[in-house]
Image (cartoon, rainbow, N blue to C red; front, side):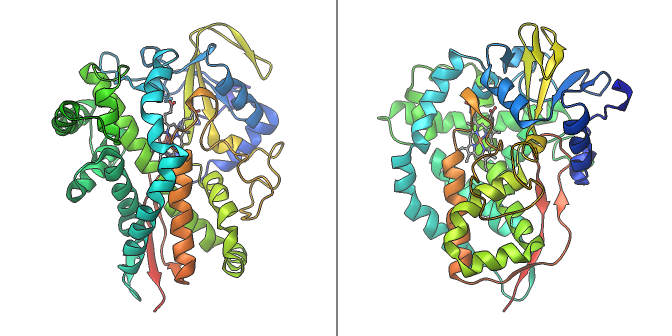
Length: 402
Ligand code: HEM
């Protein structure tokens, strides 16, 4: 049986977008398989929705701690760990998450709506008509960079630096087209990020508290005296969290609609469907491919015996296509009755803190596209990322009809 367990961590599966049949077979025949031999060492795979929820909700058994390896199938490189609150267990996780959560609280989201709309309109109205351009660069990356700079109150003129650091933080250093080729190179770039952030941090710490992520962390007990690696780690988390995932949903959504003209026609006929389109496209894209935990004690999962110290990988891409929980999971259906029933934001104590902000940005983007009745045509193949962690689309050529 184990011989037949593929290495689901192979990044080529996601670059070539051919992961679906492997997971469908495992969900049916062997939903919690053990892969003995992989570049990441041995690991368990959790492929069904219900089992993923069991792991998510039992953080005492399934730890996220950096020192046990963290939250990706590849362990944090020994001695070079970058702890941050997604790679922590309570109580430190709880305190640090609480520090930044208010930035995405409903009242602040309501305050930001006008600004997000204004920027979205600016970006859409500035797009060329009748000529091919890259949707990822001109729309997805631009809108998320503008947002991220706002959250940090980072100089807008330098916003693409945030995009660059995000790309560096999540780069698979083994990929041919990786932006950094080694852990040392990654660290050198992230140290530059830390220097820039430390400058802003110093100014904000000396000034009265205000409502941006840097000021909030500089003034909070749980974060104001972070060691340098944790400082880099937490900035990395917030930049990647707020950047890549939303960016890839903006691109993945456009592709999904282009591939499903019937759904696009439904949306055009009834723009109010944007409210259910957005969660469906986040399920469909599943921007985070997996999260990993480490067992802190022996446990039973899907009939298998997990041992203390084992690596357990939750495959969100698979849980989101689980036919036992989601009707017609391979279908892209923009008016599902329960569109938020998906795992793209995870669950439990680490559930994405920025989920509503991401939805809001996507909602506004699609409202404004529809309002302008933009006929956006995908005119070439996407360039997908060689990554087993983030389902990234690096470029997508499109044209807007004149
Ligand atoms: C479509 C967009 C997004 C997706 C799919 C997404 C997905 C996720 C996932 C899967 C997790 C881990 C959940 C778990 O372990 O159970 C997570 C955590 C997190 N996300 Fe997001 N995210 C998105 C947007 C954002 C945005 C816009 C922000 C920032 C403003 C953000 C910040 C974070 C942070 C800080 C965490 C760590 C939470 C914790 O450990 O308590 N995310 N996200």
